[in-house]
Image: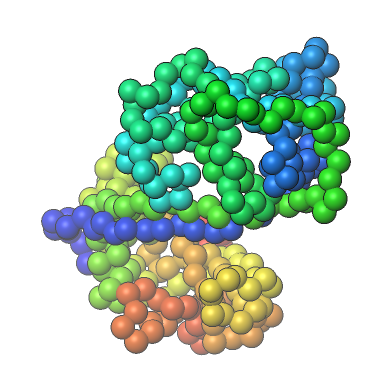
Length: 319
């Protein structure tokens, strides 16, 4: 199949979401545990500066720093920006200001939200104080936000040592990215062809290499690729790996094999799962073909064709 007929460019909303888990060193552990206990801690550098939030190494000298210092829960706005349309997961659901606050006793500023009725109520130099969350777990969200300081009585630092019982030693932060993905002209044609159980690449007009999946341009020659070429459906395993760790929400029993597969007529290999054969019998040169699930828009996996293995010389440039 060849040609360059017009193809509607696809678009789809996508979400990438996963829990980010990290352990904490002694300084971050003390800082987050302090938030849980309504204690704000910084760390003192060798030249006497107090950094809030604290870090474990001096950003100027790279020296390890461990001296914890309690600072006040009130401070001064050094700069700010108004957020008229908060997004999901931000500190407040109503419009608020992002502010950098230099807490009393600190030499650096902490970024957080300021609950204010409007941008006219915010200015650099204004005094603000912490509004603590009702339920605190040892996270930056234990500071619900800042609020304007009404000049009332404020808790003062008590010189806390930074030592706590049942200290927070690790955190799990949900990471999420919502975006609209558009694969472009070339890959839109590739995806549409897959739904018809065909694999289509594009040939470079100069080097004649067929790219699968197509990229819209040849990265070697730097020219656009428009000639569409149907490849496969069969191909050759060029290299592979055995997966022994089960992925969350992926209903595939381990171990299983993921391989690079050079489809017949393609100038580079794509990846796919190998099935229909014990994992320890998969090998380089194995000839495979796609298996489509009912109503599937792309191959579920590849299985052996029963043909003799391909000679190494025929696929060595595609590894």
